[in-house]
Amino acid sequence: MTNFERNFEAAKDQLITRAEEIAPTLVARQAETEARGYYAEDTHEAFKAAGFYRTLLPPEFGGLGADIETYGRLVKAIARGCPGSAWQLCLGSSHVTNVCRLFEPSLWPEIFGDGHFICPLPAKPQGEIRQLENGEWSLSGIYNYCSGVPYATHLLSQAFPIYRDGSRGAPIVFLARSKDWTRLDDWGNAFGMKGSGSFSVRFDDARIPDRFVLQIDLLKFEPKPLDKDKPSLRTNPAYYGWFDSFALFELASIGVGAITGALDEYAELMRSRTTIWPPITRRIEDSDYRRWYGRALGRLAMAEAALTNMAQQWTEAGRVYMLGGRPFTMAENNRLLLLSGEVIDIVWEIMQTLWSTMGTYPAQSGQRMQRVFRDLAMLRNHGIATAFDGRARELADHLLGTAAGVQNS
Image (tube, rainbow, N blue to C red; front, side, top):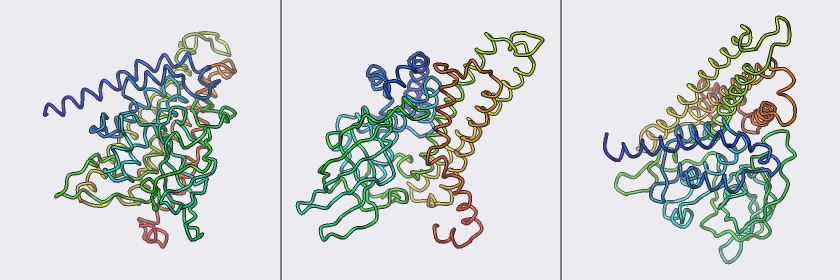
């Protein structure tokens, strides 16, 4: 192992250690985080000082340039303390991978500037972007569910274009700066993830430079492999993987961390509370509670192993494609996306076991277990999580050679 590799591994370990130190402090602040709708300024500064926002950022701009397995470990650690805070952190800091995948490295100095980059990505096109005579674009519209926006520096999304000749086309991609939007005070009434910072933003004739508008499909765009004869900053395999499979990996990482926190709480309930039916004894002394708890731990171990393996496979597929090898196909994307979806289903099933055996006290307002249940319920019905089952048909089509699979290959 080279000195660079040793230093890189040490930096990753330090990142995770710091996350594990911060996470327990977030538990007691969950009520205030939910009331505010996002984590506090001092939490943001702690995350910033620890380098969480720079995990996936290219090293040339002060980042770690880490792999998604490391990123998933960071997210899981924070979610163990507060799932809503992890959601805001994750969906704000992860989209550097998409910016590096979509935009040419010549623009990176302007985008990443001082090395601090937080960028929500509401993938659904929700506004109109009009092409102007001076080469700029005018963006107007309201974008909902901009998770991570309270401290954001940029926002990446899609809009419906209106070209100079008045014609319209398929949605195109834009990258906006924080000065371009107004954040609306409209988050907090959801069932769960109340502290995730998922506010809406409004654009009113915001001027977006042409260099930050791309007439491409956000979900299907792939950068070209590296040119061996030309140096490039785009050397992290994370910049060559598919967006949607990584997006579901993010949610699965939050879910695994959240259910780990729920199991922490379940263990405390076993120590502090008694059984409901005679013989009345502490739950930790009851064989059924120990069985329920142990089975949940086993299923969690399976989910963690699957998620780690998904990250490794995804990274390797991106690395091979980056170096000019076999393409990272849509079929492989769907297979890995489904793997993360299965992890989410396992997490949700563990939560149901805990919920159905813990009694009514932990389900009351203000209790940690109730918050985790609500947060996981929101995670499970997120648009990406609910859509993954349809990818099973697509994967079958790819492997069986049916019409849909051939068309989308």
